[in-house]
Length: 240
Length: 240
DNA sequence: TTGTGATTATTTGTATACAAATATTTTTCG
DNA sequence: CGAAAAATATTTGTATACAAATAATCACAA
Image: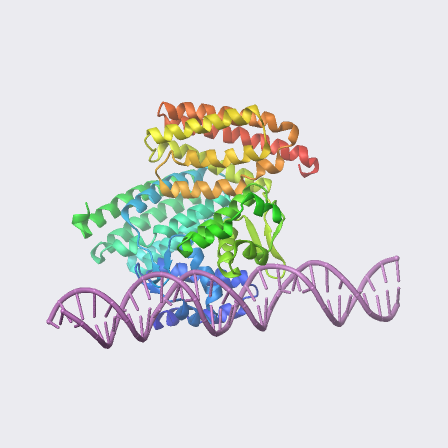
């Protein structure tokens, strides 16, 4: 687990600097969720409370709160005497989540769409640059990172807070499936598809058409699910 | 807090009988959520960890897990040195949640609708009877209880589990608003409206038309939000 | 009387020791 | 040697003491 210290040099320092318990919780929760999503902790991996508490410079008590919320999110599963294991994403769950996300994304364009102010347009401009950069040099980690960051940008297209909260839970529940399933030989193909999606949505946001952005996103989610299903079949043909 | 012991004579016994930690958590979480929803713990009330742990016959540690999940659900708010307070439902949040629930209920009829088997029809038959019974003798507690139970019955109309999970979180986030806002003089009116909704939806389920059931539900949610908004205005006219 | 500062009490947050459950290893017996 | 059983180790769950933050109280002076 030493690599993670190198990637994130000083979580313990951040935690010490945090003023309130809520801030400390937020840091630990976010860091752990990010590591799970980026496959630093791949599905099936055991997360030791003692080791994590040691790395974060806290006792097991506050760390356990973060793990318990992650368990409620469906990202880990704790069992007495066994351990806390990162969950796997099965195909049925994936399909149901994606079906729901498709519908929710349509709502993003319809329910309380946010105004396309300059900040928002600038943000999507940055996304566009990152997409082009990734396209020029495909990379698994950068792909996953952009996937997460673009999701959060997209979230800003609605002002309906419950919708944002729910969309976020659903997104993190399955987003690591891409890193899990994409074979190296298909990476550049997927990067091209994804960057095209970002460019198209950035165009829609640039002209202030949130509904169009949402429909583009929905279409890509639909096609993405289809491709993921194919990848899964290719990986273990017996699973039907 | 002695009244609650009388209502639920032996939570401690149930907890002792539970085999696993997960079962114990589920019991505590469900009991607390139900008490908040039924206004046994009204908004603003302080929940003492020590008192609750004493009532449940456990230490603060496992109790805190239940409270922490309830905090993630938005039903309570814990603050060091202050206490754990039951949250209030404000009007903006209510409107956003209801908007979202309206759309989700439409999905209930469209996404993986469940088959109308005999068990389901029997369940909605029971709901019909309870609605008629409530109509004959309007009562606040019975109204709130039927509201909760009917919600759970309605959940069975879809097989999409993530949709169920999300709908449940949203429902419990605001359902106590009815008990909070309905003045006694309007109770019988609301009971009639609600029982009409149940009868109509039960009819739709009886003929196996889940889509129709969902649309009826959606329409009633929309009208319900409108009435709640009026009640709120009537209660504190200055709030605009 | 009133306001202000100090003190005390109350409550959640954290650390830690121990219990309970499971997994692993070792032993024992056929 | 193999299998079953016992012992050991590991890990999360629980209880509890203490720390930190806030609220409430009290004393005292203007």
